[in-house]
Length: 316
Image (cartoon, rainbow, N blue to C red; front, side, top):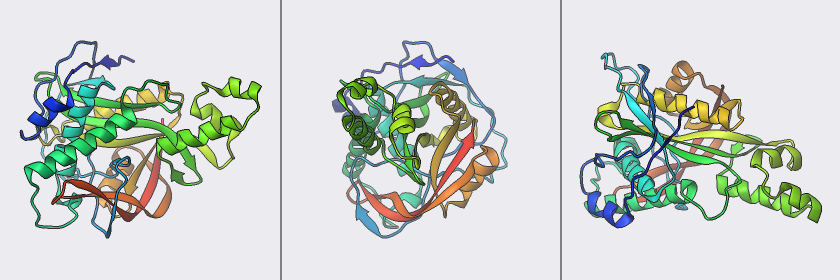
């Protein structure tokens, strides 16, 4: 599998000077070998319904769902894309701005209150928070991650514009609850710390899947989770999402997983239909009153709500 290395040295200060521009984040430069691909399947995104709010911990801005218009009958030509993987600050800043414009601001479903417009300052706040979340979860680290995580971007082959995005992460599932990677890493670390000196050395740099299988309870296992799948408006229904999903399937195989999980809100019928009918996902369980996100358009802050959420999976 060819995986591109993508370098785009754009700092946060530059990002803030550019965020007032409309959804395009400009032409992205490539200095590595990239994976090419396209597909004629429908693209997919994320959308959810509104519910009573609760302030969000800023480390949990994962997207669950899809806002694709499944019923579209037009025949759009496939868009050739270059798939890139990077954990650089510049790329993740660009990814944060892309998610804000292509997902959070792309539908009224994400509004905490109807009939509220977002100011430039509020939009900038949202981009800063989204970019910071991506940096924390997927950015470069001084130390080694025990749980793998990556961001995959799709660039228009001709313009090099970022037109699609998805993330893949390794974490733990306890019973039917998919944990945030930070919590999963803490559980794995504590399990190793409880061992004697000789065993601790054995598991010091062990992957989280090995720790889960050998040290944790039978109701806990390592899983690979797709999230943050989004496609820009101009690239929708042109196979970009399928190209991203194909790449994530290959990555999950490289990580020695034989299935991929995702989360989707139970009321999001369009997304469920797309995942089940088009992409081969099956229902695993339902988590009642699970955490979901909306955007406060007045402040540009993420707000956490309660929503029934489905855990879905597909075999690779």
